[in-house]
Image 1 (spheres, helix red, strand yellow):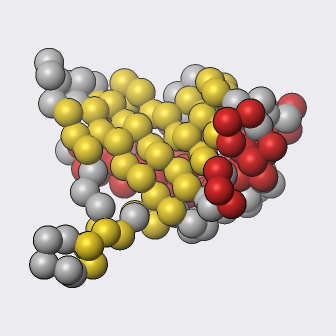
Image 2 (cartoon, helix red, strand yellow):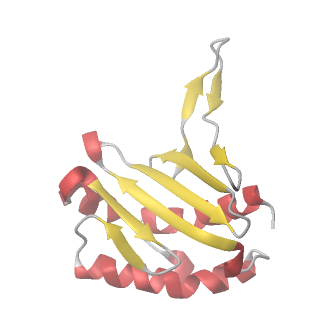
Length: 148
């Protein structure tokens, strides 16, 4: 599976939690950005493969939602013609510092290729920056190849 396709799958899955509705698991209401704002440091990071919160102080409802999402991830992957084993790691850091809703998704594929992509707002959209010619472009994904 191409790394970019895995990143797209991860984006769609994390966006479902960020929206607060969680339709990828049926229906699971979450307020991840509100909880991130109340958490020390303003960030809640979720490991979607293991179904737990690895950073921040979540409510019991968000902890349960993380586990529910992790349980639904293999089915979501199959619907998108991927396997959960294509992912070595899939982390989403939801950041509510400064009153903004941002998310940083980290995807590591089975070959060790790692990328970090930043998103802004709800729904999650790639950040936009000015290039050297003053044009608005999507911010590029930071990618590290295996062994670097």
